[in-house]
Each structure stands twice: as C-alpha cells, then as structure tokens.
Image (cartoon, rainbow, N blue to C red; front, side, top):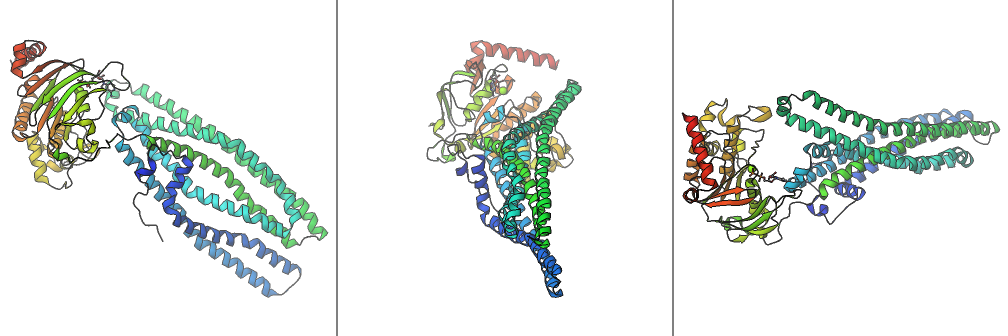
Length: 601
Ligand SMILES: Nc1ncnc2c1ncn2[C@@H]1O[C@H](COP(=O)(O)OP(=O)(O)O)[C@@H](O)[C@H]1O
Ligand SMILES: [Mg+2]
C-alpha cells in the first residue's frame, strides 16, 4: 500500500506575495493534500497504541488470578491476548510508517518543486545578491529538516498525545490516589518546556545559517578553483573554509548543549515519579488497599509514560528546527517574481522585430553612477545594430534592458511598435535569442545544448546545420563522439572559443526574430569570426541582429553602429559615416587596423 506520486499540490496562488503564511500555516498548506493519508496513518497509530497499552492490564488480571489461585484457563486467555496485541502492533506499525513517512516525502517533494519553480521565475537581481550555495542549502538541508518534522515529527506528536490522553486515565482507574501522588513531579515538565523552547529555535536558526555559509563557501571555491589555483591562495582559502566549519561546529555544539541538558532533566522527573510510586505503592500493597497486579500495572504504565516524556523534548527540538528551516524556505517563496505585465497576452510572433529606444536612462539598484544615460536609436526589422565601446561603457546593460531583465528608470523601448513595458514578459522574451558574454553550457551532449530550446532534441541533422552556421563544423569532427560528445562534468571540456560557438549555435537554433550577441566571439580568432558573421548575415536576413563586439571589423557591415562611452552614446552612424566623422570611433578603428597589420607581419 504505497502512496502514488502526485503532481505539485501547491499552486503559485497560495504563495503570492500578498498572502504571507507563517511557517505553521504553510506547514498546514503543505500537508492539506495528504489529509486522507494522514487520517489512515492516525487510524493505524491508534490501533498500535491501543494494542500497546493493553498488556499491563492483561498482566494485572494474570497476576491477580495467580494470587487468588484461580484456574489455568484465565492464564491461558491472558497469554493469548498478549500474543494478539503483539501481532496487531507488528502489522499496523508497518502501515503507519507507510502513511506518515510516505506523506512527508510527498509534501517535501511538493515544496521542493514549488521552490525550484519559483526560483526560476525570480528576477535577475535576486541572483546577483544571493549566493548559489545559500539557495542550495535551503533546497537541501532545510528541506531535510522539514521532512523530518512532517514524517517522524508528526508521528511522535500523535503517539505521545495518545499516551498522555489515555495512560493517566487507566492509572486513575487502577488507583486514583496513587496516580495523583506519582504524577505530581510531572508538573515540572511544562515549565521546563517553556524555558528551552525559544533558545532551541534561535540556535537552530544560527546553525542553519552557518550551514548555508559553509555550502556557499564550498560552492564558490569549487567553481572558482581555477582562479584560486592561479593565484596560489589555496592555503588561505582552506583556512577560511575551516573557520566557517569551526563556526558551524561551535553553533551546533551550543544547540547540543541545550538538548543534552534538557533530556537528562526529563529523565530525572520520570525517575522521581518511579521512586514515589515504589514507596507509596509498595506501602499500599502491604496494607492491602491495592492488589499486587494493580501495583505492577501502574509501575509499567509509569514506564510507558516515560517515552512520551522524552518525546516532548525531542519534538520541541525538531519542531523548532523545522520551523526555522520553513521560515528560510518561505523567504525564498516570498521573493516577488519578475513582474509580468497585466496586459492581455499578445502573440509574440505578431510583434514585429523593429526596435526603437528613446531617451533611455537606467541606474543599477545598488549603484551610485547611472549605467545608461539618454540612449535613443531606431532599428528597422531585419537590420543589424553594432555596439562597441570601452569595457564597462554599458553595452551589456543596454542589452539587458532590451530584454527586460531590468526596468529602465526613464525613457521608452518600443519593440515592433509596441511599448515593451506593456508586452508580457513571457512574450517579450520569446522574441530574443541571446548569446551572453559569459557562456554557460549544460552538462549534456553538444546536440542537446544546441537544441536546448527545442521540444524535440532528437534531431541530429538540425543540430548539425546550426553547428555549421556557428562555425563549429570542423571542431565537431575532432571531438570523440561528434555531436554526441558530452560536456562538463561527465565529458570533455571545450576551449573558450568552442564554448562560444556552441552557445551561438544554441541561439541560432532558437530561431527568434531578434538575435543578440554580446561579445560572444571574443575568444574566436578574427578570421573564424569573420566567417561566422558572414554566414550569419546569409542565414538570418530576416532577423534583427544586435552585435556587441570589441573588434570593430566585426561591426563594419552593420546598418547602424553605436559607440558607447560611460553609459552614453558618444557617436552613432554607419561605418562610413563614423569614419568620415573622424572622432573616437575612427581613431579606435585606425588603432585596431594598425595592430592587426603589425600582428600579420
Ligand atoms: N548587476 C550590476 N549591478 C551594478 N552595477 C553593474 C551591474 N552590472 C554592471 N554594472 C556596472 O554597469 C556598468 C556597465 O556595465 P556593462 O554594461 O556590463 O559594461 P560593458 O558590457 O560595456 O563592458 C559598469 O560600470 C558596471 O560596473
Ligand atoms: Mg559587457
């Protein structure tokens, strides 16, 4: 009887920014779809627990009948009853495990899925201010804590509650007076619970934050391992990592300290109860006011109560830890997703690919200097725009604004005549094929990387034709498995230039109306670059192209060239016009020509 796999039960609706559930409310939301399973689990648990609290009473009858010297038949029935309770427990323990633990896995699966889907919808600036390791830690360590609570945690809460709600009454039935006397020490427990609750919560939060630090540091060091080795700073990075590790251990020990004080304190209370019972109960048996059977039964119920007593400490601990973790997951879910415009959806292919930018200005959220100032230009559908300028002049920033990765502070972008601010994000992004400055390829085959945006990735011929257009044809023949060569962790490493061309092929294969190349051929030699651009011009005649490059030869055929400097358009025009102007563009052009000739000779 296993739970079947379900789809994600959490819709985006329940997680919207205006709906701020507390960690507790959110836990309920997570469990809601599995109500039925939890009920089955609870039923199984009750059956197990009823079977578990029977034996002392059965034992009482057996002992009392021995004392009275009664017939053997009662003893036999008692023996049979004991066997039966053991068998019932065995069977239903299996079911409660299935239902409770199964539910915990499924709820956490829903949560992880919701978080991941949400993360992919978050705007770019979230990722520039959040460390990958921190996100990873929330997706793994924190979710693990939550799963523990939703599975074992709930089970133990219900189990302990059952004992608290039944055992004292049975004890009262056996002997009200003795029960009242022995239970007095237990009043201490709620007091102790209140005392430690908050400090466990706060220290758990510290521990999880440290774990995030540790993951982030490991992640950054491993992705930047080449830089670290290049600068020979392994030793200092190792000691920095160790410091993080030590801080984690220190906080973890602080948490363990509270826990290790709390548990023995609970044990002490139970032991104290036992002593009281032995003294008063023993006297009562001698005085004949209760039977020996009742006394033994009381003694074993006392022992049975000691487990839920311990469980209280344990539950508080995992509850506080999981709520601290839930809060960290909620922080991610509360991040507002990149805003999609509320306007009615326009078909993206009905939007043209002409671009008109007027008086655009923009400053990065945390920056003091504006990234772009008063940018205006106009590009017809199918035209090519070249952008050049010094490093940091705002070339990539301009592209990011066009693709609505950031919103302009003032000015307007029109795409196909429509205000870009009014075009829904999804439709707008579908217009662009983007080759970023930093190439990123997935650890998959070259074919899968090229056909990344395609539904059907099983079209080697299509992939090959785009690879050829991106100037990758000759390289493919040198790879061990051609198109099927695996990249990254599980396969080969490409050179910078090869990576750029795979990235270019991927953009071409997307077949979008606007192609954006952000200095994406910088690691390719000039000759290959010229060939790639020539083939691009042939094959993308209908697409609007925006090409950012440091190499001005690459831009000379563009319909419009912008020379950016310090976020402003310093010069703009065709290659010919800019040369005639004899300004900065012309000077940079001369310099590059001279350099190329020197290199040739
Ligand atoms: N995410 C960011 N947050 C703040 N400032 C940024 C960010 N990205 C780039 N900048 C700054 O904006 C300016 C333009 O950057 P960029 O457009 O990347 O230049 P280019 O592509 O021309 O080399 C630079 O001064 C850079 O430091
Ligand atoms: Mg750039």
